[in-house]
Image 1 (cartoon, rainbow, N blue to C red):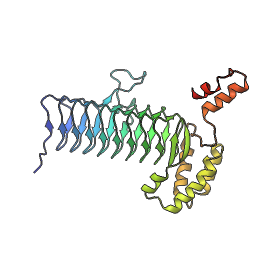
Image 2: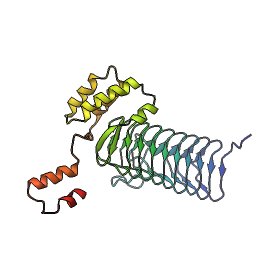
Image 3: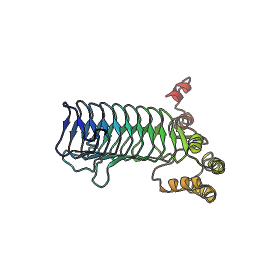
Image 4: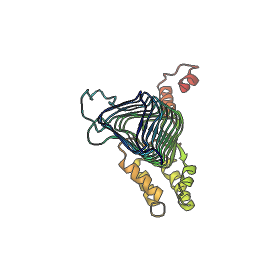
Length: 294
């Protein structure tokens, strides 16, 4: 029979309010303080610091030097303020140096879903909500109040501005800067640019071929031209009856409070600024290339 009692290394510090499920492993030099709940089979490999209130789901593994549940980086949050803390789902892997900050309010915790894979040095800011089956590659940074829906993949060193939303099955390329909402099923790159649909992700998710074909057609009409948001929503809703992904995109756009990232029909911000300066006569002769690079 496998050992069901928690195994706590002699160098670990486990506070009196902690609740440890069956088969939990607390490795060397871990520190658990406050209301910490670890469900069955959770493993803290070593040098992990947890500050309650925090709950970690069954079989999740946390690697060395991760810090979870500490106060939010919010100037309005003062020592001693109440927090809903952090809730992490089942079967997640949190690699070295991951940080997840507690919520800045008491109504809902900072949340990470089930089966998520956070690679080295990822950061989830306060009040962030991440869905299930999300992969964040090394050094992904999510600011406060960001919402990442399920089955999203984000490449290394991608960064998301506070209050932004990333739709389901989106793919955010490495080194991408996001300060606008990214609709479901889209590929985002550079800065707030939608470069196409995540066709590989759609196929792997089992979306029927005819729906993918319909989605490609409606995507060209809604995102590869410059349209105001109400017209984008109308175009997507026209195809919604035979294409549920189009309906999901329309609903995402309808709920967005921030701007929506632009398709390839819109020039990048750096080009717009360069053109505006050129028209105003502010460009120095011979400095064009340098300005675009910067």
